[in-house]
Length: 257
Image (spheres, rainbow, N blue to C red):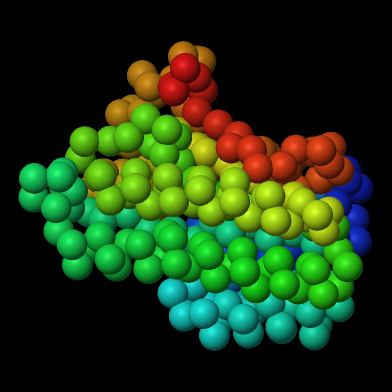
């Protein structure tokens, strides 16, 4: 692991859910590189342990956590407090998509409910227990959720996913109003199309194929990557964003614009 890029997060303790791959993996790397100790939570155990070996066990720990089970989320936060004494940053990133077409005329309700269990209920459980820990510890922390640019523009073939990310946006804006009184900031990153393992699985394509598909959606030259979203997460976690609250930070290369 390279030496710290800066000391902007030195002494901070972070949780990253969905941290073993994709945007979560890149965020875990960058948070650690900026000095935070990172609790990487996921259900992909091998990938999680491999990532700890890569970053260094002195900078991070892997914990198995299925965010659809509130007790596991509660235990994740409790273990973080037991081992580190505090929680400063929560990146609630765990999410999923459906690899079936979900238009409104053929809407699959059971598939929608499975997706919402992760993307909405799981997100709410993470924000709930992360916020409780910060309030109890008197920590003026930062909570960041992964939403999507689709929350603003919609999608005719993935209606359930767009709905779930719109719910995340509502969660962030509502929680920010309550938690701001405690000095806790709640924001979200809203990526455009990124060729993560989750997205590639939904479309049934390789990372290279996905990047070729998505490149025309950006008004910037090049391809949006997970590292670009992770850098936005680091910014929102740091004191550089100390007066940003209830905000959706689009990282989409100008797609929505």
